[in-house]
Image 1 (cartoon, rainbow, N blue to C red):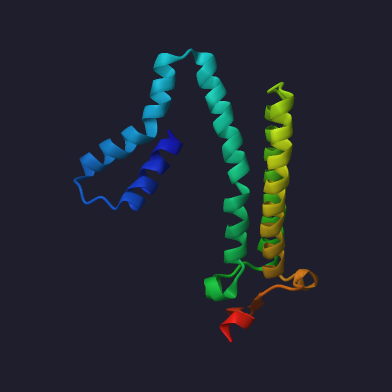
Image 2: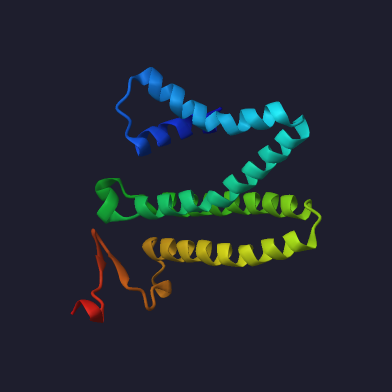
Length: 173
């Protein structure tokens, strides 16, 4: 229900519809809920449960891509001005994100282990490497913004108090 409702508002924003409220709600909710209804009508409860488990795994994998940038941008003075996170919020937020993402990764591993196929294990392992590299990169950039200066080697982006400046490359000169 929550996913359908939030998906409706996101879809309304992307489609930029200028229809009556009723027509917009009917269209966007229908698009959001139709796949679930089709599975519920044409399959048994076990398929619906499996689809729900798969969607939970996908959401667990996507969570770091929401939480890490939120902590990063709310810690930038150039973005938040007077409302920038203080040290306690930076540390607390970072630890909370770490705990939540670790718990979610545990559930992803449990789900993949339950699939029972060597081919899926190999595919999951390969995708996990790319995924962890990208999440690690996001975390690295977040830590630089949070003030861990020793990680800021070879970076083109410098976080100066109040200003985020991208250094010009040789091709720009």
